[in-house]
Length: 152
Image (tube, helix red, strand yellow):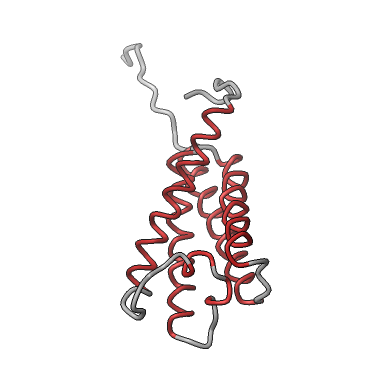
């Protein structure tokens, strides 16, 4: 698609947000199942949204942190694939994590843990910067041009 050729389409933006959010929680579930599921008897929604479980005092807490950080890398890939524009990466990343914050507040109240906020902000930064970097690499690729004239 050519730069600036796309018109503003709110349904496309909403679909992109829903897709990124869905992929984010799907991969977070896979990583939580991989990292935390082996250490707990049952994996529930509290591992997704309970801020008090993000702690450095237990192996489960560190496993949750690892799942969030690895998932931030996946989030950058989702933004790269679905958004495709470097200047929109920050918007979609912040939207993703604000929706996650709202769900955390609705599930377990406002997060008060310093470590939770540190991990949360780290994930936002990693997702945004890596997503922008990936998009910029694609945007800066040379456009292949075929010459129609003969070089004699």
